Image (cartoon, rainbow, N blue to C red; front, side):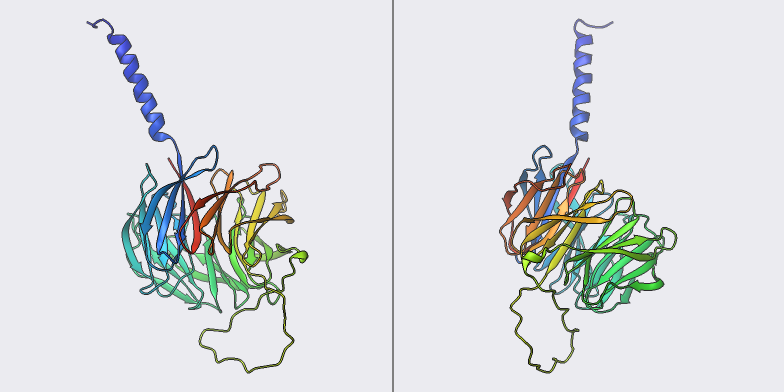
Length: 388
């Protein structure tokens, strides 16, 4: 027999349970910025209605902590430390607060300025600029990187990035000094990379491929060239994974007055003999990062000499880029990321003590006035993850 009010009590309990489930399942968005000079990682929670960042605290990593990657499971963050001993750290992400806690450390074959994972989260890719190599490291079923690399592949000069395509069948690596984009087939069961045929494609001389971004439909690969500031569009053969150049468009307007940069000498090479050349007073192009919105409508790049973010629109169907404009940003902008909903862009500057958050206009792609938040010294890399 029910006691008086027991029905109401049951309803209230049921309602509280529902509210609790909704509260627990509410997605949260966390932002992480690696601070190379401080040797730590800043963590923030983002208010998705405004883009505002609230500090969650800092996680100690090591001097020259730079590139980072989020695991496909969204449970771990991988951070590469480029000071000796060079290593990759695995941090667990607290789904409630976003706080990081270190769970593992593994050696790397060289100082690596880029890190990514395959789409299954079983393998970690790294690229070495100074060591002219790329590597594959295993990721345990627990999401931790605890073992040394299982494959190390020599590349041309200055391997600057490595990234799998969205199908997880192919992997590409940009080599700045060699002026090439390397093409590999990828075995997701063993983690083995095999040179594709042809093994590489090259833009025109002097561009210097640096960072990569795939279109959401996986039909195009966009390569930001550090020395020219151009973005090269490559069409991806879905069956073979080979690239075909489609277009190349500058992110740096002529009125900026910049000359193309020059690739550094090979590591260990003898100094070139002194030659009298006319003094070039023009500052050099020094492009850094590239990101595309989740809906594939807009693409952004950074340039460190002018401290600007460039906006491109992406044509439906063809994927061709149209340069729109540049926006002022933090000093020496090394890293940018767009949140998973495509509403906000976050930018860090290596010579700034602030990180900027921009609202993205969904119609034009233009960036609104930034909100700025304190960050550590040598802010380098940005990662954003939404956690349910």
